[in-house]
Image 1 (cartoon, one colour):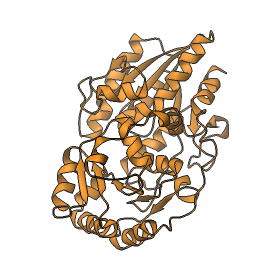
Image 2 (image 1 turned 90 degrees about the horizontal axis):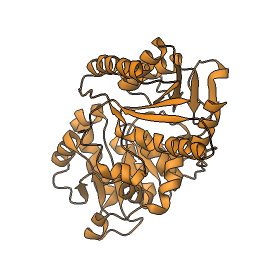
Image 3 (image 1 turned 60 degrees about the vertical axis):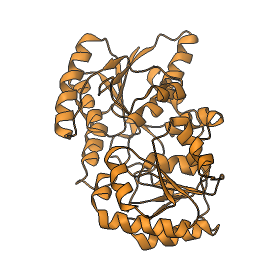
Amino acid sequence: MHICLMTGARPNFIKVAPLINSIKKAQTDGCDVDYLLVYAGSASDPTLEDSLFEDLQMPRPDVYLGVSSLNVNEITSGVMSAFEKYLNEYSTDVVIVVDDLASTMAAAIVAKKHGIRLAHLVAGTRSFDINMPKEINRLVIDGLSDLLFTAGSGIGTTAEQSKIYVVGNILMDSLRRNLPRFSRPAVLDENGAADAEYAVLTINRRALLADEDKLRDMLHAMSHEMRHRKIFTPLRGDAAEVVSRLAEGLSNIVLINPLSYLEFGYLTAHALCVITDSGNVAEEATFNGVPCITLNSYTEHIETVKQGTNVLVNEDASLLAETLHAIVAGDAKPYSIPERWDGRTADRILQTLLG
């Protein structure tokens, strides 16, 4: 079996690394299976630093499609054209696409036009807001997929039940494997920050960064509630520029350069709390038992709210302050770890593919 692992952004590699490990283990056991790792962008993408692949103990992509644009329609058309050339050149039995990016959708469409078996990793996530571009991507990908690999039973898809496989959360495969290897970043000691005495802030959502009045109010609210405790904020590019400007004068908000996977894992796992707009970061916080505040009115990973440590505060500075005040006071919400966050998701996926 020839498997194509299709990736479109840095976080995707954290999710395919366990699959590569499972494939290599199956090869050792004599299974006739191989893979090619494909990336939609270019080899010079600055987010794909060597340390990412070293930390994940995985190879760099075998094939780069070379598509780079900030326009989702240009990404879609570019990936469709480049991925069709890939499929014409390389024998492929199954294409596994990850998450809900424009590049993911583009590859899914081309795979189905070629009559190739299509599997969606992290299927069934929904915001139920059709005005969001990613929601459209999810609907298209899930609708086309032959195999829907989901993290849990409470998924938002109308696909045939025979196509749905509740395999677990593959992000936890990487987390469990690498937890003992996490590395304490130097920035903690440089700022005199002890474990569980600091917060971590991550922001990537464009709509949130564009609403500077709301963001400024939230930065002031979290700075006030944390008081003398540091809020480490690893950001790059436009996000770093916006937050740096709006947080001027807030001495406990410390902007830092993006960290390696193992350093960022340590930073979030040992924090007093995590404040984010990332579903993946919220999932990791739940696994680590770290209180999490999501700066949104919804999350596609609803189990982090229903069972986990995550609290949704929308973009409400007052609600953010109230929630953070409770966490600082030691009154965080109770939580439990969702089912099948056991580190065996990749093995279940490969078993399903191999029949």
